[in-house]
Image (cartoon, rainbow, N blue to C red; front, top):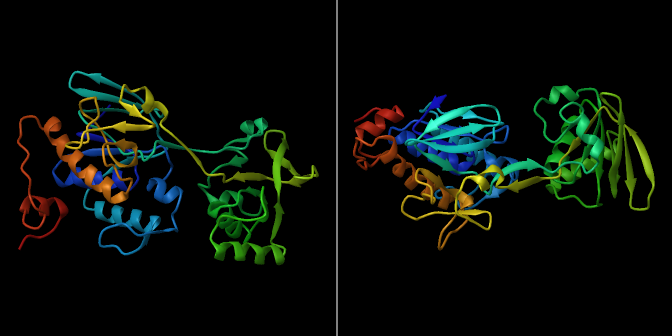
Length: 339
């Protein structure tokens, strides 16, 4: 069992900044996230898209914001538990016992839900037979691109992820790009690059087609795709990759006895605490009068929730607010030499 002052659920920008605030005031924390990478929506939904509402940062991408937040956390040793979903939360004396689907168990007086609009799960192929090939020949994300070198790859989707990987894999592999429409949602520069590779014979493009069946014994051998006119084509495929976006849902959080309000969680505006003592909600998932779903709002909410955690984590100590510009203690935690 892992004992910690606070457990943060969600490794997006709000979760990362909340961790910074906890460490700044001397509290320990761990971060759990259902995704396989740090960054939340910023990385999964718009890693290359510009963000304009971060104070003192005129423009940055989701990836740049994530990297900057991670750099801000460098003075602290934060342990991340990725690819883990929190399934069960129960009260035991003064602590919450939190269990994940990977059998990690945490004991903590404070749980901070910073999970955006809930957990992310990929939209999957509607063909039932795909399930037996998942994580073997059919994937919804790329963890090791070397696995696909020199193979026949069928990529489905019309957004940035599908187009970016089609361009990447066209260097060393045979790529089929299949999309249910003629137009693409990705960046125009990438769309232009795809059409250039199609012209050069490095990508075979099938628009207005969708998967209807898969074939193989143990591993994928080929796929059948059908267009709007009913024409079916069989395509040799060692791998199929589906990039259809993400389904956002509360998941197990809905069963924790929290005040759920239209897939958000009601909180107070003093501590951003829920109706359960020691459980807080910050970022897009929380709700209160005047709520703005902005990243900067999440930073504010995380800062206040972090300070509320101090009372439960250190019941025999009194929290004393200190400015980072003048506090020797805070500078020591950051590894900054005092004047």
